[in-house]
Picture 1: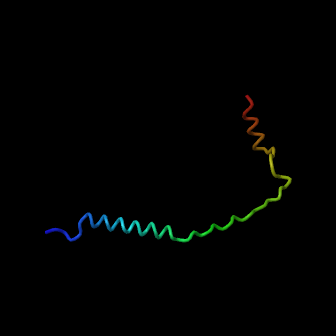
Picture 2: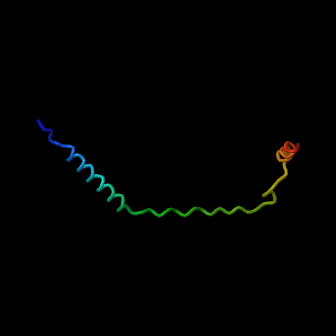
Picture 3: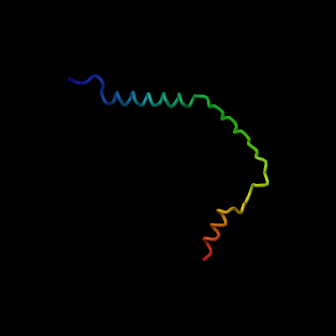
Length: 64
């Protein structure tokens, strides 16, 4: 006895479902991304290079 659904029917239905899914995704409206918040940091006196004990210890370790 031959099964009612053949491989050809199965793959045809699978292709049709994939096509419908692709169309649904393509028609979905794009949501615009929210702009990133602008964070401004005021420079302070302590920004930048600082000669700390950790840095001094490193420099002492590199001297041969």
